[in-house]
Image (cartoon, rainbow, N blue to C red):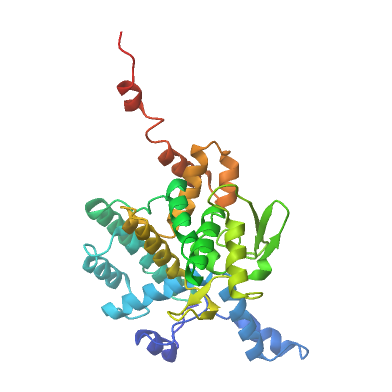
Length: 348
C-alpha cells in the first residue's frame, strides 16, 4: 500500500520526527478494535504495536539507520526519493566514503522506504551495480583494530595496580573484564551488579541480551580466578568495594574530582580508556587500538597458548566459525607460514 500522507512526508523531508519504529501500523489493528468491544482503544493498540516493531531491531541498528537517513537529508535528499536521487547521492560520496559505508547507507534508505510503504529505490539493479562499480574502483582495505596481546595487557594491569586512584581501579576492572569475558563494548558498559554471581572458582556473568542474543535468552560466561598479574574477578571486587556500588551499572563515569556517576559509562569511553592506558605503558601501536582489540586479543592470545577453538568461540560469543578462524589465522601468521618453512629449512 502506497502511503501519501502529506504530514509524514513533510516531517521526513525536513529531517525532523524520523520514525522510531521499523514498520507501518496495519489497518487490521483498527479493524480488530472496531469489531471487538473488549479490545483496547486504537491508540493503545497502535502504541503497543509500535513498541513491538521497535523491539524487532536492536537500538544500535536503529541508531545507525537514523544517522544514515539524516546524512542523506543533509545532503539534500528528500524522502521518499527515486532511483536517480540515490545514484546522485552515491556519485557525490563515491570518493569521500568507502563502499561498505555507502552500502550501509543504502540499507537504511531501503529499510525506510519498505517500512513506510513506498517503493524501494535503493535496491534496484542499477543502484546495486553502481555501488559494486564504486567498490571495485575506489575500494580500500577494511581497517581492523589491532589485537592486544596478553603480554601487553599484563603490562597495563601491572601499571594500573601501582596507581592508587578510583579511576585506575575502574580502568583495571573494565579492561580485564572486557578482555577475558570477550565482551563487545556495548555489552561491557551495559553490565550491572545483578548480572554477577561470585563462585568458588571465579566469576559468572549472565548477560541478559547481546548482539547475538536479541531474543534475550541470556548468555552466561565464566571467568576463573587468575594466578598471575591478571585476575579480572579480583580487579572487579576491588572496584566495587572502593566505590560501594551494590546495584545498577558496574562501570560508570568519574569526574576529575573523583565523583562516581550514576549512569553507565558511554560505549565510546572504552576506546578512550584503552588508548590512554596503552600510552601509559608506551605501547607504540596505541592509536591502532579500540574496544574490539580486547576481543581480538583474547581470541588470538588464547589460541597461541592452546585454547580449544570452540572454547574461544563460546567465550567471545561469536556466531560464525569464520570470524574466529580469521583471528586464529592472524595469530599464527608467522608460524603457519609457507615462507617461514622455506626460510627455516635445514641446509645440507
